Image 1 (cartoon, rainbow, N blue to C red):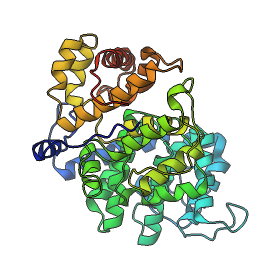
Image 2: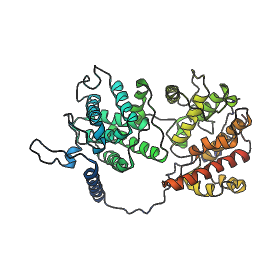
Image 3: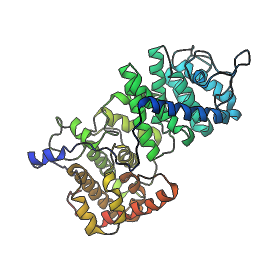
Amino acid sequence: MRATVKKKSSRSASRSKSRERKTMIVTTTTHLPDELKEDIEKFALADFAQQYFRQQRTLFNKKIRMEKILEFTKTPIKESILLSCDELNKEAIDMFKGILEFMGDRKSSSFFGKEASDLEIAHLLLKLAIDNPQIRDELYVQLVKQTTANPYEKSEEKGWELMCMALEVFLLPSPNFENHLRHHFHFVADKSTSPRIKQFATYCSERLANLALKPRAPQLPNPSLLSQAREAPFIKSVFRSSLEQMMEYQKTTHPDLMVPIVLQTLIQLIIDHGGLETVGIFRVAAQVDELAELKKNLEISKGETVPGVNDPNVPACLLKLWLSEIRFPLIPTEFYTVMTQNCKDWATLERILTSFPILYSTTLVYLVNFLQKVIQSENKMTAANVAIVISPTLCRCPVTDTFLVMQQTMLESELCVTLLKNMPPIFPF
C-alpha cells in the first residue's frame, strides 16, 4: 500500500517552503583579504610540494618551480609527480597518458592499447585508482595540473569531467592533499571565466565536502553509467539536492505531496518487491551496476516509479544512499547535539521535533513510520539492527575527531532506536 502524503492547505504549503539552511559549523573564523588567503595557500602548497613532490629538473639540471610542475602540459611525464607513487611509477606515467588521451590532448591508443572511447579510458583510469589507493593522490594532482593554466577550454572541461567522475565513484584524496584540492576547486569556481568550468568546480567542491563528512568505499560502475557523472553538475538531481529543491522540482507534477516523490517511490519499490519479508533488508548489499542503473533511471524520471526492479535490496540500498547524499540531513545540524544528548528521552525528542522545519519533520516521520513497518515484519531486522544501518544517514556528526565520532555513532544509533520505538504512526503503510 502506498502511503500518499498530500498537502492539507495552502497554509501548509507555504510553511513547507522553508529556506535552505547552511550547515552550521562552530569555528573561529578570521576574515582575510582574498590575496592574503591565496598567498597562505601557496605557502601551504609549497610546503606540501617540498615534502611529497618528486624533485623535477630541466635538461640542464635546473630545478623546476612548483608552480610550473602544477601547470598544464601536453608532454607526457617521465615519472610520477608524488614520491609516494615510487612503487607505482610506471602506472603513474601511464595514468598521465590516459588523462591526456581522455582530454583530447593525445591520440587514444598508447594507454588503452587500441583506439578507445573517452568513457573506456575513464573507466580504466578510475579502476587503476580504486585498485591502488596509494595512487589516488597522484590522480588528483595530475588532474589539478591539467586544469591549471590550460589554454584549451574544451580540454579543461574534459579534465573537470574526469574530476567529477572520480568524486562520483567515491574516490577521496588523502587528508594531506584534501585541503589543497578543495582550494583548487574554490579558486577555479571564483576565477574562471567559463560558466561551465565554474559550475564543474562548484559541484566538485560541494561533492568533496559531502564525501569528506561521510566517506564511502569506492565503487566503479560500468563505462556507460559513468556518462551520467559528467553531466551531474548541470542536472536537477533528486539525490544530492536539498529537500526544498526537490519539492520545487516536483511542484508542477505533484503539487499535493508533502515529501519528495523519490522517497515515496523507493519505499514503494521495497514494499512491492517483498522487501518487508526479505531477511536482512537494508543490510544486504546490492549489485553495483543494478544500483547505478536504478539511480540513473530515477534521475531521468525525476523520482517517478521505474520498471526493471526485481530485487528489493536494490531500492533499499538506494534509499540509504539517498539519505546520505541529500544536501542537508533529515536531522538538521543545528539540532544534532541536543538530540544526541537526549537520545533516550522520547518526551524531550518529541518537543524538539516540533521545532524542525515542517518539511524535515514530515519527511522524518514518513521515513520512520515505514521503518516501523519493517521491524514489525518477519525479516530478522529489529529496531537495533535497523538503527545501526540507518542512523549514519540520518545524522551528520559535525566533528571529525575519530574518537568523538565513534562515541557519537553509538548515540546516533540509540537516537534512531528511540524514534523507531516511539514515533506515532501518522502515515499508514
